[in-house]
Length: 208
Image (cartoon, rainbow, N blue to C red; front, side):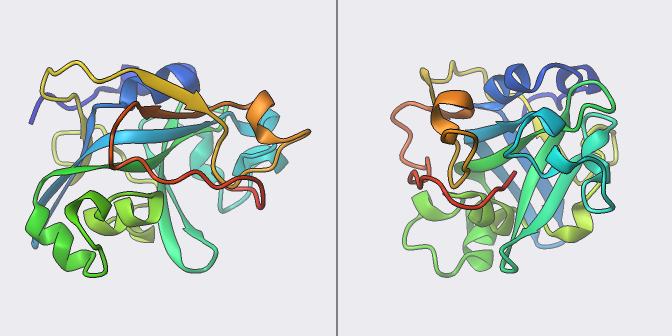
């Protein structure tokens, strides 16, 4: 695996971080083995000024980790069913984060299959934010986890050097903003032509 991402990578505007995360790998080392997922889809959330963000109403015990420092995981329970993982970015206090939406399992496929027995194919192992965290074995105990450090069991690393495909931007999944999320916040980014990108679902409840 290529070199882990440093603190400076995350200490930038959320849209820059989101785009640059595509093609990177999120890696989790556990007693069950090492699983790595190459990111093919992410969503950006810009804190208090973004009505789709969990931080839109300010700091709460749940969202405190979103306010920094950058380079930490914000993990939340979605709809009372699944864990979803976000990467905190931007200057401390801005509460911006990138939701890790989908990717391709490139290492530890067998361990990911054990965690995701309902997956119909390897393409579906991490095809969606809840599936991605399940395949990696990331849960609420990782909320606030620092992704930067020599002893961290969860980290983000640059890809294998291959140039990722064209980036496609569009409305975020399941988010309803003023006048609709699409025109105001086309902040769902994914790599064109990737079979692991999750299906689009419009409108509805806030998330991210």
